[in-house]
Image (tube, rainbow, N blue to C red):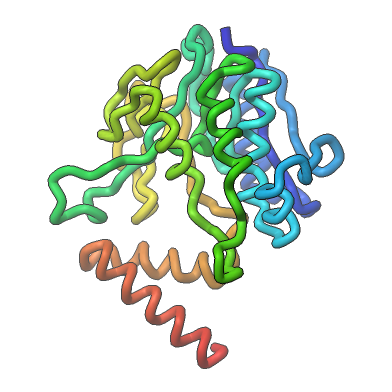
Length: 260
């Protein structure tokens, strides 16, 4: 059984904003018998892994959390949620699994010309496991050989779903976005934990199966990155995602070069 513990991370020392407090309030509402455990600099060693330590030095809090959440769930068991996850019903039916996780949503706008698309699992949407689960151990081992710096000195900002999905595929996952079992666990389709589009910010498939909603707040991102994302959202309504991304990126680069 997965323990009734909700883990979340909050590094950097800033106060929790109102939208985070509202999400945590939803956890308390629908998971009243669960313990909620916050991990931050006061109770977690951010230097126990070199990748995480370097991410912390660069103030990339989301990448610090990427390691921490795997570590604490592997050690203690329980459920992890990003702070922009709104819970809408009890997680009790999930507790009998040894591990559960979810695919990210993929808006059709992003893949208009592609019939088959590899889909990623994202632990930030919410995942749970018993202590010592082998998949989490394998992900921790991957991070031991991972550098936060590229060879040219730039930051390695590859998002964690790539690493997580890579390990899950070694354990029997097929990256087709469908609910399926892998070795000692289950991956749910996006409707369970990620019904909101990560492209247009619109609801794609809220159903009776949905446990929670990931709001893609990206509190770790810079103002410039958020502005670029918002522009991409708007442009995606009128053109394909790839073109919208290129235009938004070009505008961002021009504005940065002109310092406006």
